[in-house]
Amino acid sequence: MSPGALIPAELSTFAAIAICAIAFVSGTARGFSGFGSALIFMPLASSIAAPKLVAALLLIIDLVAAAPLLPNAWKQADRKATAVMAAGALIGVPIGTYLLTRLDPVITRWIISGFVAALLVLLLSGWRYRGKEYASISVGIGGLAGFCSGLAQTGGPPIVGYWLGRPIPSAIARANILLFFGASDFFSTVAYAASGLINADALKFALVVGPVYAVGVWFGASLFGRASEAVFRAICYALIAAAVIIGLPALDGVLRSA
Image (cartoon, rainbow, N blue to C red):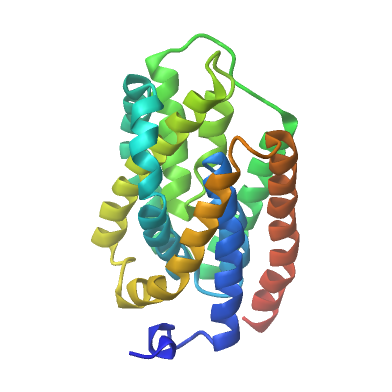
């Protein structure tokens, strides 16, 4: 089977290459910090392809590429606290998935860009939850992250804001984030499969984009502990902002042609 046969019919070769480039950058962010891939990938890629395809594609390639990071995360994470938060995702993921299957693609694109912009502001604000750890709060944050993941695979910032605000070492916080998204990706896989979002086009295209994303994840993971986290996260935030800004003109073009 030729590579061209793996690309969905509605996408050009140039569009497929562009999505691969976006996947590498977003994978690098994911491998280093444990989050950020969807915030970069979704606004840009969904301005090139249908949001349903893009969300399913990201879920598939992230589930496979991030799997090697899970064994070490399992050893370092606070598994009990992560399980409580994952219980919230079990509720939020199906709700977000339902909206993804029902909303108009143009509206979904605007929601993705607007929501990612709002989450970027949250990250840049430096907000962190520093209160006591309550099960209800953990479930609520997990539910919000699950909803965001179901709608657009963008559940990172609520989780990051919570875990980085806890009085725990950064390595444990990162492990908690990775382990949570392992569970969230599993819930999303079930919900997306049941909704028909994981289809032949997404699976075949994942064979093209997945290896590029995996290289990015490996590259990002190799930087953790070696590069300055502050500098890298500043670059990551800049890339997220660029994704929103660059993606908006494409959305305007879609609206004008509608």
